[in-house]
Length: 461
Image 1 (spheres, rainbow, N blue to C red):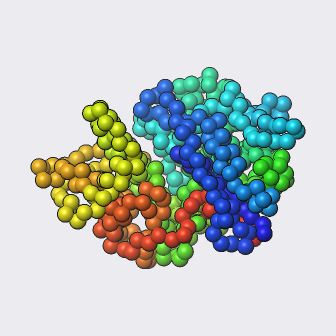
Image 2: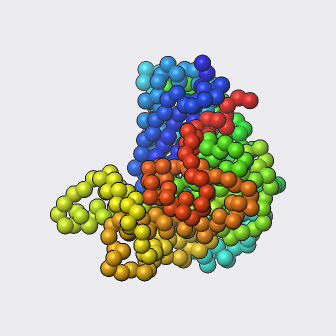
Image 3: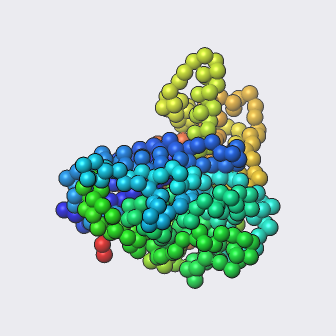
């Protein structure tokens, strides 16, 4: 049997799976946390990751897949966290990666630390509203926000031009992975990832080069763009048994791949809650401009109508870490898993219904970056852990509902919501909040994994 390898380079972990070419569920899968976050010189406004650690996590996943199955991989599909950007310096004589061999056989690839920058992620907020307002609007139906590749590069051009001068390539982390596997001289980016950077017109399939040149943007760093689903190159060497010459797809967006693996019917919407949160569905054409809903390029000329919230599972995780810290300061220690377990148990108790209101905008939102979190209607009867956790879950969903209300779904003939992401599937309190806000069936299917979607996208037609 032949297989397609799917790879998802996520914000907190790398996931891989092997899917049969003939269709069906993955026959093997692995995941590994990257633990790649590094301090930023911008403090809380910065968000950076260590690229060598991400590459190492990828190898850790692949090395644990069955060797007898890897020999039968005929395609590789790669996706990953959107919007972010990393820089690297690469020439045919001076590579940005290194092939580690033993007895003449490739063992693994490593990112060369001196040739790559950190990954500036989608969570980076160094670009102020004043900076973004000072440059012309994109020639695109999509806006450009802080954390988007073009915004980060613009900030660097204005504040750290000497650092930019050290590099001649740029892309998302998944673009770098594809370039590394195929030993590409120049990266290739799909329309999905190009659109996530800003200043890319999805209808003409071109960067807004003239606009960017007018603000001294380093346009030489903009990658070549190809259609989603196209092949970027071939595996440059045998890799854990996967044959040299295996076609590798140009890297895709993790959101699109997650939807591809989840959607079953045209009347389905998908709600994904992991680090952040997204609610959306597939449409044939770009809809009317809306401050809180974006139309992202999907597959086969279609688009995703998406409300993408910065505040999702990360907000709940912040509460868990805060509780752990408080308990530690009191001289005790509680495992994170136990905190989650207890919060969900307390929160699902129907008697915890209260008037406590939590606005969970710890990270603001792209359409309202200066917004902050707040708590209101506090009284002596609603400050137990159960009340607080339930109210926070309801606040996370209410924020999404504000961005894409139920009427938006019903007007598009959406009849059910498919749940996706560990932040939602493991949290019954959050699930109840979804049903309360949208009054639509919430179901979980066997799909949902972005790595699986990356594999599906590359299955030979």
